[in-house]
Image 1 (cartoon, rainbow, N blue to C red):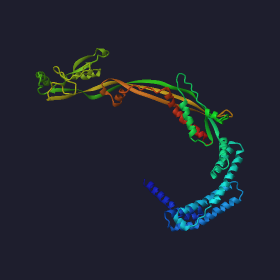
Image 2: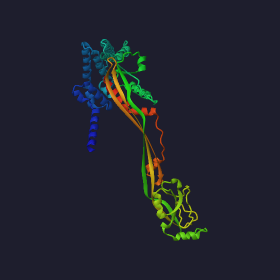
Image 3: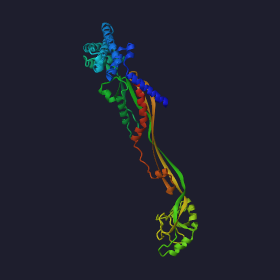
Image 4: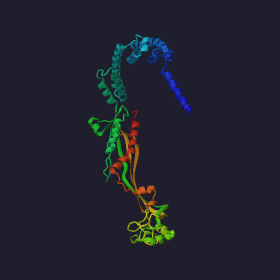
Length: 470
C-alpha cells in the first residue's frame, strides 16, 4: 500500500514537471515546435519566467524557418501528396502564432509572430484539388478496395475545402461501391399449435446492425429495404432459422416434508389461588388443591386415524397431550371455538388470557409440547429452448461463408406450499411458501422471446467480429 502511494506521488511530481517544462529539453533535441509550445504554456502561467522566455526567444525562429523550408521544398518537389504536407507545415506556423498571441508573457518575447494564413488558404485549395484527382483516379479501377481509397481521398478533399466541386456526390458514389451490402432474411418459425412470432427478435437484430457502427464499409438491409434501394445483387445474405425449439415444456414436482418444532407453548394453566367472587368458589378451591399437572384435563379435537370425518371433542390429561398431538389431534373444540373458562374439576384453559371467573390471584403454568406439520411443497417449471442456425452466404457463389448453431434456454418457475398440522412447526420459508398461490405462467410469445435473448447476444457478437475488419 505504501509503495503504491509513493508511486502515485512520483507520477504526480513527474506530471507537474512535464506540465511546467520550460521547453529547454525539446530545444536541445531539435524539436523546436514542441519547445515553442511548452515555453508559451509556461509563460501563460508565469509571464515572468525567465528560462521559458529565453527558450522561446531561441526556439521560435528555428521553428518558423524549419516549416517555411519544409513547405518550399514540398512545393518544388514531385511528391504526389505534396500539398497535404504544405498544409501541415503552414498550419503549424499558424498554431505557434495563435498560441503566442494568446499569452501576454510570450508576446513580450516575440512581439511580431509570423502567420501564414494567406499561404495556407492557397495550399488548402491545391490540397483539395490534389486529393480529388487521386480519388477520381482510383475510383476508376472499379474494385471495392479501390473505392475505399477513393472515398478517403474525397473525404480528405472535402476537409480541405468544404464542398469542393462535386466532392460530396463523389464521396457518396465511392462509399456505395466500397460498401459490402448484406441482406438479412426474415426468420421462418414453424410453431405448430403455438402462436408465437419472431418479429421482436428480428426487429431487435435489425436495430442492432443498423446502429452499432460495426464497419463504415458494411451496410445491412432488411428484405424490404433492399427492394426500396433496388439492390438486386447483394454481396452477402444472412439467414436465420430455428432447427428445433420448444416453448412451454411443463415439469411438476411435489415434495412432502415433515416439520417439527420442540418446546412450544401449547397451553397455559391458570390456577385460582384466591376467591373468584362467583358461586363456584368451592369448585375452584378444589381445583387449586390439585397441584399435579398430569391430572389436569385439556380440550382437544380428536381426529381418528384414517377416519377424519369422525373427529370429536375430548378432554385428555396433560400427560397424554403429546401423544394426541403426535397423531394429528389439535387443542381446542372441533368446531373451531376456543375454550376460555373451566367447567369442571381439573378442566383447564388452553388460551393465554385469564379465563372468566378467575380472580386476579392466579398461578400460571405453561404447557410445552412438540408440534408437527406435514408440508407439501409444489414446484412448477416451464422450460423453453431452441437452437438457431446462423449462416452467412456469399450471394454471388451461393456458398456458405460462415455457419454456427446458437443455443438458447429460458426456465420459468413458480413454487408454493400447503400444510396439515400446526402452523408453528413451519420454518419461516415454509410459512412464506404456504401463503403463496400458483403463479400464472408467461404467454408462449414471452417464453419465446426470453429463450432467444442469449441467442441474440451470441449472434450480435458473431456479426460484430465477422464484419469488423471486412
